[in-house]
Length: 284
Image 1 (cartoon, helix red, strand yellow):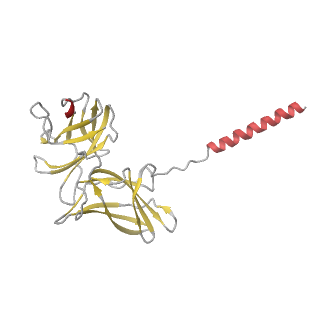
Image 2: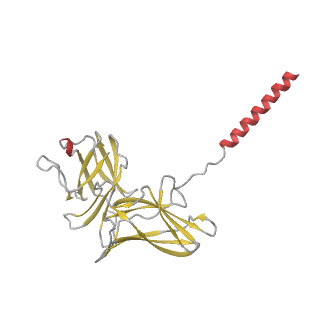
């Protein structure tokens, strides 16, 4: 009888343990929607705060992915129905101009609005960038203007080209991916804009960008299996393949071709011409 009682007690204890373990497994895990990002600015307004995030500690010349959140101080909650827009503006000594930028969207997380800006130049002692944010908070239209610092890339490598094509159009071309290059055939991505006015930079669609990576310090050798960058209408980027056969410094020679396959900028790499005038630089 004692043996049966002992066995029964063990069974009850096992069931309770499994039940508790199951309950623990079903406990929802709180996810931080800005995990891995750095808050580079926090702006305090009368009834709310604005937080601006980036993957890097500084905004740099070139392509910058930026996330924005707004916290309502009355409810202490981040807001999901902001309908935000933004406009970056460079104030120079003799003129002002905007920068190519995407819309702000919150498709992945309702309270985090994401987008990108391509800054063409760095801030300095007399010329500076401002970011104007317009949004709706509790039915009230809001506007905040933030003075932001933009620096030259820390690695000193060129990943942004601002140039005039043979069609007399001003273009802005910026490297996006791979962010962490590897000895492999990497997915490559770039963005291309044109300057209609000092304030308007629409996306350029359906052009082509040829890719010819070279190691200038290793006999200027290239690599196999590269694929030209072709316009992706879904992401509004130019996507292709970048083959890197070893670590080190690479110059990615480029040519920009319009819809009629006319070369607007850049040249073929030959023995007589070791590099294109249009290029990106990476080192890993």
